Amino acid sequence: MKSTGRTSSNAVDNAPPPRSGGALDEGAAQARRAPQRRRVGILFTSCMVPAASAVAALHLAGCWPLSYSERCEDDTRYCTPDGTGGGGGTTQPDPTCEADPTLDPSTVRDRCAVFARAGAAAGGDGTKARPYASLSEAVESAKGKRVLACSVGAFEESVTVAVAAEVIGGFDCTADWTWSAEAQSTIEGDANKAALTLTKGASGAKLRSFKIVAADATVAGGSSIGVAADDIEAELSSVAVIAGNGMDGAKGETATAAQDGASAPNDVSSACVTPVYGGLPGVTTCEDGEATSGGVGGLGGKPETDGGNGQKGQDGTPLPAENPDGSGLGGAGQLVSQASCARGEDGALGPHGNPGDRGVDTALTLAGPTGGHGLRGTSGARGQGGGGGGGARAGEFCAAGGGNYDDGPGASGGGGGAGGCGGKAGTGGKAGGSSIGILSLGTKLVLTDVTVTVGKAGNGGMGGDGSPGGLGGMGANGGARVSVSGSIQGCAGGKGGAGGDGGPGGGGRGGHALGIAYAATPSQAPALSVVGEGTAGNGGAVGLGGPAESNGAAGVSGACWDFGANASCPQQ
Image 1 (cartoon, rainbow, N blue to C red):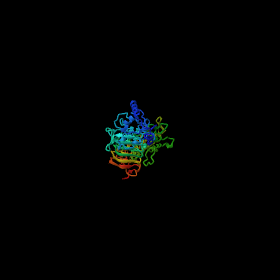
Image 2: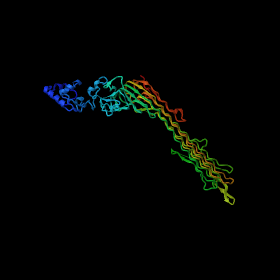
Image 3: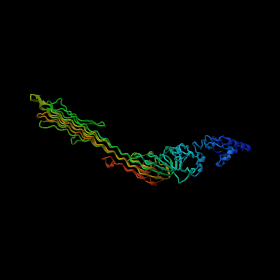
Image 4: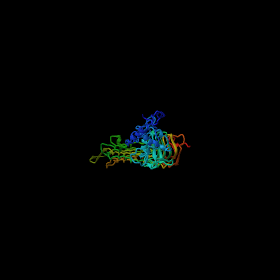
């Protein structure tokens, strides 16, 4: 018959009478002859579960073999009333283990707890004799038992609790795991991670008598966070939290150079040359797919067309929305022999890009604050192409042989150069890293006798510079004249306008220095003592040439900050 771990009074009343004399001697002799190895023990219903001082006597009485297992699967003495067990490797607590181990040393034993000691030998199994070297491994392996941590040395790891574990530090493992109210076990977290994280699965978790130290961040914009808790019910008591320093945010990237506009080719018809064609313009397609083009040179006058007048050059593109100065317009053609054609007008500059907005907003996640990066500026616009030069008038200056001259075409105007492409925008500076003692996504985290020390937050990164717009291409000369009176050279095309400069990136927000940060508004201020409020980071400057309003916002500092309301927490 299997015992349930608690012998009932009926079982005692109904038990057979004790064996006498020789039977007892024979039972003891059989026990002494049993092999000395770990094996399943048998609890007879006639024997009460013994106190430690009675073990030897019960060995002789045949009620307890010399070798036994503390697994419920092997020995029903270690099973809870529901049969699931409270000994090693079980999932339910043993009722005899319910007492607080800081008050009742009898529960500081293998069947009641899993043990962890920093620097312990690898391959531990969580017993007092062979504790886990990793606190994280101890928590993962506890399966309903308490986790008791040694106060000697420091657990050099970031610990994640994903179950409703009770973790108690402050035990002196060099003195038979005695607990002291003045002692604390230490967690020294990894850089760029919270030293202790309580996830959704940790609802109901309790952690007591610990010193939790977050390492200084080592990556640009990295934060140093002592404790990060999801929106769960959990409790920290007799805990000291020390947050390290956050890192400065990364500087925004300065844009690469913009493409220059193409110059017009020297390809144009000269006086007395047929066929007549205007000078070809420079044409450039920018990286954004938009093109800028000079105007085609005006045609040289033809005797049989429009009275032989030279033609106007075409306008460069894109035309400005407003063009009071006549930028990029084609030059007028020669209309009378005593006048000249006109050179094409230089193209207008492209509009400059706008600076990026500064980094301000922040959201709170379990991994830390997010957002607050400066925004990218906008690119400059492409410049206008230069206007095509005007064509020369036709005239009786083309050689016909024998010293005679016939009417022939005038020289055409040169093409305009393409405008430069718009300058590229600089990217925004990144937010500085924060220094936060405790981060809570909910408001149900209970804090008892908790102190927090906060470090220095990182400054926001400076915004990247925009690049200048590309240079405009050169206009081409008009076609050549002939060396006879009345012939003039075709007029040159205009130069393309430079592209507009790219806008600089906005500065990143400075990091926060906070004792505790909430994602939602708590009903009352938390009960914790902030030893030092730390130093918030400055906002990063906007990129070169940007306005002051694009400088990043400074971080905030204080004992408690509510990211949901973007304000300090209610005061006690």
